[in-house]
Image (cartoon, rainbow, N blue to C red; front, top):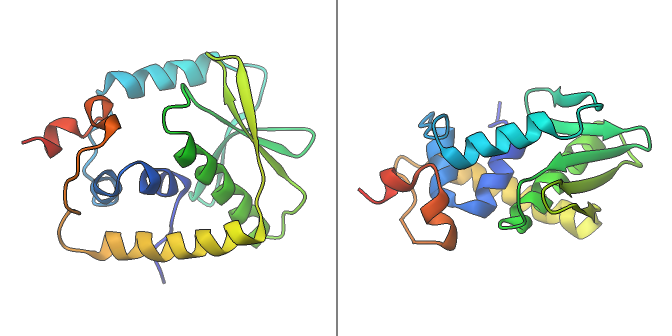
Length: 164
C-alpha cells in the first residue's frame, strides 16, 4: 500500500518541504504555536451554523459543505494562498476519484470578509498526481530536506527547529 497523502500534506508541500517532512515523521511543533492557536479559535468561532470538520477516510478534512455542493476551507489570511488553493483542489480531486462530481470549492477569509472560488481543471489533476509522487519521495527520504529561508519562517511553528 502506498503512502496516504492528506490535504494537510498538500498544503505543507506548497508552504515548505521541510515542514512537510517533519509533519510526516511525527515531529509536531504546532500544538503550542500562537498562529496555529489563533487559527483554531477563528475556526471554532466562524460559521457556527455549519456542520463542520467533515473527515473523509482520514485523508481530507473539509471545514464545511454548503447545500449547493460547495465545500469550504476557512483560512485566517491570504499569506499562503497558493497552498490553500491547492489544498482545496486536492479535496475536489479526492472526491472526484471517489465518484463525487459537480462539487465546487471555496476558500473563506472571515477576518478579511472575502472569499475565493476554486475549480479543478484537467491540468490540475495532472499536477496533483505529480505532487502526490513528489510528496511520497520527500517522505521516504531519511533526511530532512535542505533548509532555505522563506518569508513565512518567522511565523512558522517549526522556526526554532530549523534555526538551531
